[in-house]
Image (cartoon, rainbow, N blue to C red):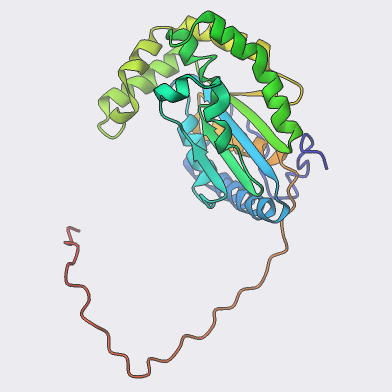
Length: 279
């Protein structure tokens, strides 16, 4: 089965079909759907390990579009040794002197891995271009070569899936204001985020140029409107599963073995430094 076909039998596999943007989705319904999808992600994980398949998933999008929440929903029930999340810091002086995609290449998946990039080499087409961290010539050079680099990835056996999360101006403003007002979220807001917020149309132009250059047959961009965080998580996970030609492995019956007898062992007073109980 081609990875472009993926699993077409989502209903028979217990998966939920993608939701229409006009749907309302209660927390109960969301959690019910997510539980089933996460079970399928575990099945996909075990298939990846057995088959040696390599998967690379890229998440890009508007600031505050919900990339982190989608990634968390994907990874919270699977093994971090199989599903690796890569979120690289700003490049060092040495890395700045390298070929732009070079620092990302060591993080590409080996056999039996799914690597998820929370932002990726497309930083050059987005934030670096808009904020002036690279020249227009450097950005254009990247855009002229990235499709070829990704073709080489795909030809090496990597299933490459790219997502762009989009929201409108009003929803972005609401979410950023919520970060300002919530001490649990303030770490998500940097001076760079505020400056980026003011350049909505510069980012739109950069996005459009990026799509024109890199929406290829072998690595297309999949756009998800994320005005509803719950819906976009369900939609993207459902789509991701449809892109991987996994087959659930037969369920094995597991029986706990008997524990050994104590043979005179007496519990030691090892807990000398207890964590204080506050509740």
